[in-house]
Image (cartoon, rainbow, N blue to C red; front, side, top):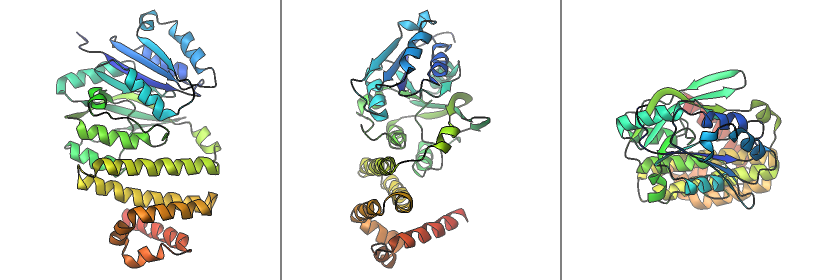
Length: 331
């Protein structure tokens, strides 16, 4: 690359990733793009992740001055770690990288080239999903315009992750966009559409830049406790509500898409909650959703169905409705 016109900040939250942090760090330190600002946020990780990170950094003398490790005073969660990283970043553009993932050595260079060619404020490369022995190239479609991309992401047709995207930092700072601290699951699904809304240009680089690691062993062996499940449902509900509020005075189309997805997914989660965890939690969330979305549900489902949903046996009605709805959607 003949010149490096601006600094790129690479932002990495760190918590409980001692098995993977070295791979992640080396992929960043070995970037062919030299003008980097590298920020690791130690969210009070209880393992040796930071010790390993510092040992690896010793091997890259040219990166030492570019690298900062910021430690939270206490564990605050992923959303807060992302906010801390963005606030500390000094680059014109930034990229989020999760500490169990890694990037191609020329990822930043290639994304910057594409950004210079197009002037886009968000540039996305190809994400490779690694499921142990299975590699699947995830290629984001070539959208005809930003509106089509927004509809697909809001409808959860295509991936919504912020990781691996080159994003102009001013989109965060000019519009004061932050993740909701304490809401640590699904935060990307809220943040990505908000950034897209303000971005003047979005392009795709047809080249692999990012490796997303899915630890299938961990996913198969971990069963959520009731508290963990309830926190997941709460975070999801909070993200939906926040995103609806964001679009309420901006786009009726986007607001209604989020509302539809919210109703469907929240009721699906509630069914799982009732089935595996807590009937009382099911009734609590049902009450909250009916209070918030009652008029919408009457429009979407009809007054009779809406009335049935309020009955004690509504769990069984919901389960049947969701099964039927999925069949219609699939046909």
